[in-house]
Length: 185
Image (cartoon, rainbow, N blue to C red; front, side):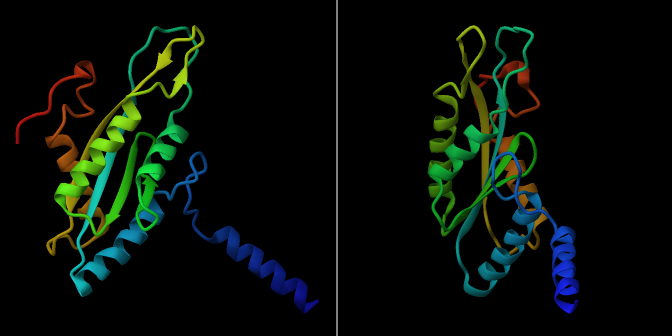
């Protein structure tokens, strides 16, 4: 009887544990990203390691409406991010359209190369086909920020990376200007 109680208690503890994986993509979710960033910030403080946080905001480019909503590009995005990232990097889905990659041992120049490589992978080919056979394409904005000692918690790190995303792109809020040039800094 004691074994049954122990098994039941273990099962209940598992049910109460927070979910750390995005169900659609298999990537870490925002909770897991926050935990990992907290750990990596502490490590960077201790050892002076370089690191960058890259954010990608993705939208489907408007296509002819066939009355059928386009499929979610989340799996396509997850595959592109994990293919570009190294095993030591942390790839996460923050929300429906926002993805993050924590780049271990990256500086500003390397993170910029990484974000451009990922944007090219996301936007150069259709992620799916619509019912009439035409390609469904994505538009991706990217921003990245290096860790520095003024960043004390995951929320501040995410804010800094998102500010860079907004400041270096046409920005997701300007969907009518999908192909606008980047804003000067």
